[in-house]
Structure formats: C-alpha cells, structure tokens
Image 1: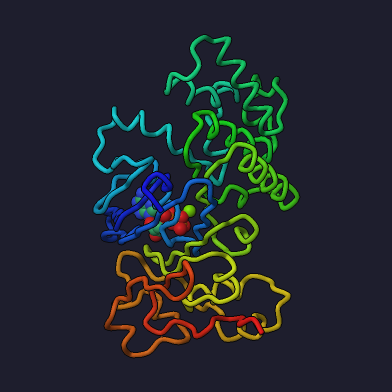
Image 2: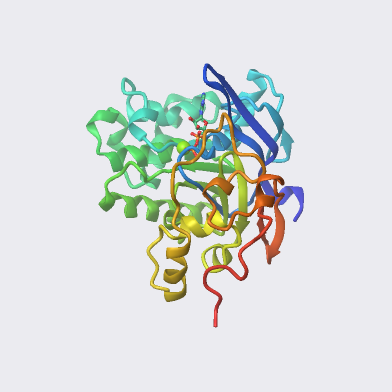
Length: 328
Ligand SMILES: Nc1ncnc2c1ncn2[C@@H]1O[C@H](COP(=O)(O)OP(=O)(O)O)[C@@H](O)[C@H]1O
Ligand SMILES: [Mg+2]
C-alpha cells in the first residue's frame, strides 16, 4: 500500500464543537484511510460522528487536532482560497437532497456550480453540454436542467445531487446516507445507480450509513464508528461473519440474517439504551456502558485498534472469540 493508493486520509483527527452544553467531541481521534477504487462503508448509530468525519474530508469543518490528507496533500491548515482547488478532489452527496439543493436555482445551475468554481467548462455552451452529459449519466433527461428542485421527486433530486458530485470528477465521493430519506422503492434504484457509476467511472466512495445492512452489498471494507471513534475495521466477510467488537455484533443484531448462528448471537448482543453524550464520554472504552461483555478493566483502559484478523482491526480489550458466525 503506497501513498498513491490512498485517496484520502484522516490521521488522529479530532473535531470538537464548543456549545453551551459543553465541548461536543463529535470526532475524537479517528484514523481512517480510503483506498483508491474502493467503497469504504462507515457505519454507526446516529450521533457517532460519521457526518462530521465526512465533512472533515472536504474541510467543511475545521479539525481541532490531527491531520486531513487528500490526494497525497496535507490539507489540514489550508486557507480558504487554497481549499477551493482542493475541494475538487472530494465531493459529497448528502442525505437530504431537498436540503442540499438551492430551491431557487435550476437543476442545471446547481450541477454547473462546481464546473464554474473549478473552471472546468469554458463557455456557457460547453457548460450546458457537460450538464446534459452529467444528467444522462445519472439517468435524467437533458431538459431536467431547466427545472427547479421542487418540481422533482425525491429520487430525481438525489440523482441531481449525484450529478453535482460527479461534476468536478472527484477522486473521492462521500455518500452521507444517500438513500436514508428516500422511499423504499426508490432506494434500490439509487443504490444501483451508484454501483453502476462506480464500475463505469472507477469511482471511490466513502459510504456512510447508520446500519450494517445498508452497506453490506456495496462495501469492500467496513469501518464501524461509535461515539467519535473507530471501533472496528475489516473486510465485509469478517465484519458480517466474525465481528470482533461487541458493538459491531450489536449492530449486526439489527440486520436480518438467514444464518442460524448469527440468529443465535443476536439475542446475546441486542443494543440497549441510547448512545452517551459526546460532551462527556465514558472513561476507558466508550462502549462499555452498553456492552454486554464489559468487565472492570474496560472502565480503566481506552483500548487501541489492534489486529484481530486478516485486514481486520478492533478496539476492544476482550474481542469476541471467533465472532458471531464461525464457519463450520
Ligand atoms: N456543528 C455542530 N455543533 C455542535 N454539535 C454538533 C455539530 N455537528 C455535529 N454535532 C454533534 O456531534 C455529534 C456527532 O454528529 P454527526 O457527525 O452528525 O454524527 P452522525 O453523522 O454519526 O449521526 C452529535 O452529538 C451531534 O449532535
Ligand atoms: Mg450523519
């Protein structure tokens, strides 16, 4: 693995937000590398810091500590002006296309904005042609360019969000729960679109989701996040078959599976209670207050990510032995 194989990297990143209730430690020491051409699934309950980590990759939030590297360059301290050039390398598709598209602008203008910002299409004619091409890529007619977001369905709006993300030909697209606010019937269409675009255009995705089911068929690797930290990373065949972190096992218990051993494990690992406040995370292991396997030592020691299997790392003092579904 050389630096050129990594499109983006978070290195011990912290993003803290001062609020009246105290310092919100949204991201609190996350190291994560996205490899060129892969889909990295980033999974965790709502409030675990996934969106903030994604925004940090676009430098749309300011890091409190740690580094952000994009396409080999350290962008942690870049000025606003220098950032503009960098932002072409990473694009984001947001959960709610209604909120992420300017309601007063035509679809064409929204898609063309990155082209203008990054000076990618010289003339108005060239820009219009490129917008038509992008609309075609996402399965929309060229005349959609003249519409406004409110005239489109949720699925169509998200296609526009994807077209806009593609406009700058980014090295990485952060997909922040891109189907979570869509009707069930439309979700599969958007997933198919994302899959086809990836294989046709060789895209790299960071795919954010709040449950493991959403990323199972899409991800080459999975990273599980809890309360501002990565607690486990690994290839899907490990994460879904032999999770090492009790939190991963608990998330899995929410995934419908046909596998009897996993079904058995499910009863043992149901998640109870809410995620604790990121203003005052538990001492030691942050998951210990909800962990069915927690022991006294878990309150004392903050576990680091250690290798627990092939390309699999977990931050747990007492990783699950063989995971939920040891193959026979
Ligand atoms: N701009 C902000 N100001 C204050 N708190 C924030 C801000 N953005 C996110 N948070 C808080 O940080 C935590 C992580 O949020 P977020 O990154 O959105 O998590 P996720 O995407 O996993 O749901 C949450 O507790 C959230 O309320
Ligand atoms: Mg989020």
